[in-house]
Amino acid sequence: MWLVAAFFGTALLYASVGYGGGSTYNALLALSGTDYRLLPAIALACNIVVVAGGTVRFARAGITPWRGALVLTAIAAPAAFLGGVIPIGKEAFMTILGVALVLTALTLLLPVADAAGEPARGTRWMPVLSLPIGFLAGLVGIGGGIFLAPLLHLTRWSNARAIAATASLFILVNSLFGLAGQLLKGGLDRLGAAVTLGLPLLVAVAIGGQIGSHLAARVLPPKGIRWLTAVLTAWVGARLLLT
Image (tube, rainbow, N blue to C red; front, side, top):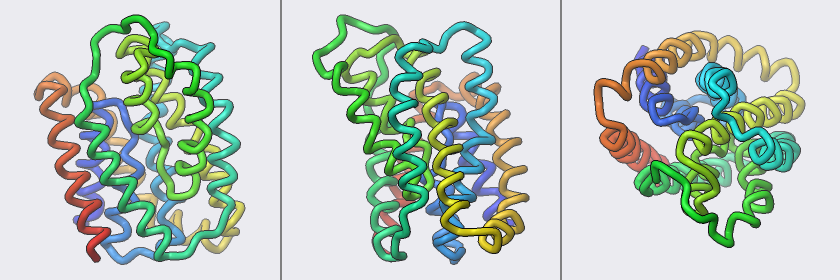
């Protein structure tokens, strides 16, 4: 029961700042003693549920910068599939996941500009950088947008809303490709186990994600939500690494 509540809260917080929460879903499952081989599939499925609505809303509002967003996503998606297919041992998986959580917390603390300035030179390297982010997304079950978005902000790639829309699309597509790779690697037996465990969690994140995207940002200041999410993510990541 605590796991369902934790997934609900994670989805609410992450959706309120435009992300899926895949890294934290993985960590919560790991701390609950779930077979590590099931973690990425469940986390990626939860990611898809949380960010799908936001991606559609951004697109309908005409906010998504399709040309740039599709370039980044098209490069990362095959790498996410490859990451999902590649076998990985438990110790390596847990270490990479713990480090990813700590880095996630740090990215949440980076300032977010309200508007784009003159693009920095690093902008040209974003398609290249999206490749390893996509691979990491598929390997350990995250969407990757939480790493992509700060880089886009630092290089002044576009304004804050366009970057949020790009990150949402990036997370959705990477999660779909990463999930396909994970299911191909795991087979039908592992899929059945993931569905049995993950169904109530998917319901929890669907509800939490909707509340987060519609209400949380209006109740708390966005900066406060980001800091709270960063603290919780860092704590979970540090605990995972220490144990």
